[in-house]
Length: 357
Image 1 (cartoon, rainbow, N blue to C red):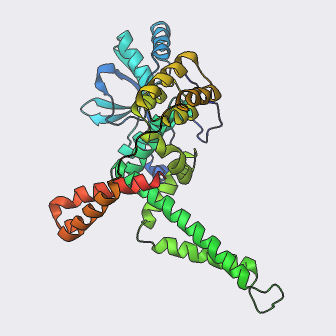
Image 2: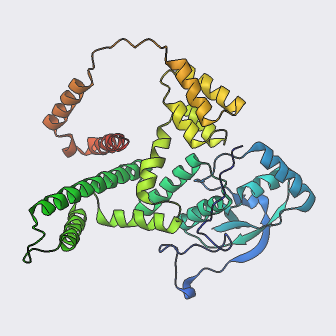
Image 3: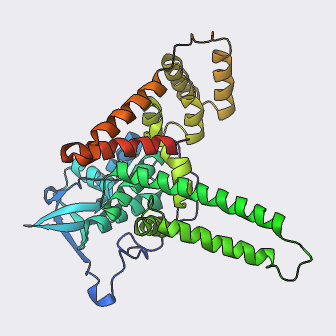
C-alpha cells in the first residue's frame, strides 16, 4: 500500500477536541461535555456518510491481532442517537476489529455533535493519521462543503468552478487595466497618481466587482474559504484545480487510487491513454511491477507511438448544442416547475465540465 509522505498537520490535540473552525466553536459555557464510558458494541451504528471507504486488509488484520491480545486501548468517539444507541464518529478501524474479535463492550467518548461537527471530526481524524487516499480526501471535503452550504455535491462542484472562473477573469482584468494605466502614466508627471496607488485602486475595483457578481454568491464564497482555512490542507483554488479532476479519472484508475496501489501522478499519466484495453493492461503492469512515473511514461510512449490515426467522423456536437439551446429557449423550460430542477442539474454539470479545462 502506498504511504503518503509525512507532513506537519495543522490540527493538534486529541480527536475529541475540535479545531478552531468558526462553525465548531462555541462559548465555553455551551461546550458539550465529553463522557468516557463503555457501551455495548452492538449499540453503535456506522454513520451514513463516512470520509473513509477503503481499509487495507493487511493493516486491519494486524489490528485485529492486537485487539485480541490487548483489547481496544484508545476509545472510540461516538455521539448519542437516543434510546441507548450511538453513532460512530471516529475509530472505524477499531470498531471493525472489535466486531471481528466479537467484543461485547468497547471504551468510548460520548459527545453531543451536530451532523457537520461529526463529519468534520471524522474527516480530521483520518487526515491526522494520513489514512485517507487522495480520492477519499477529495470526496470527503466535497461532502463537508455540501453540509456547510446546504446543497448537494454537484452544486458544490459547480460553485467551485464558478469561483475559479471568476478568479481567473478578475486576474486578467486587473492585469489588463494595470498595463493600460502604465501606458497612460507619465513617469515625470507630478499630477498623476503613482503606479502603486493605481494598482491599489484596481484591486479595490476588482474586489468590488467580485462582491456584486451575480454568478458567485458572496456568502457561499466566504463559507468555502472558511472551510479550507479551517482544514489547513490547501486553498479552495488549488483544490478546484488539482483535486476535482481526480473524480473524472477512469473507474479502474480511481479504484487503484482508493486502494492505495497507485500514486496520483502515475494515475494522471495512465488516464491519458485513450485505448481502454491498453490502459487497463498498463495499469495492471504498473501496479504489479511497481513502475516509476518515468517507466510508465516510457511504456505509454512505446505502446501508442505506432498507433494508426483514428478515422475522423463528422463532429455533430456543435449542431446538437445549438439545436438544444434553441429548443430550451423556445419552450422556456426554466418557467416549468417540473423541469426546473433537471435544468439546473444539467447546467451545473456543464459548468463543471467547463471548469475542468
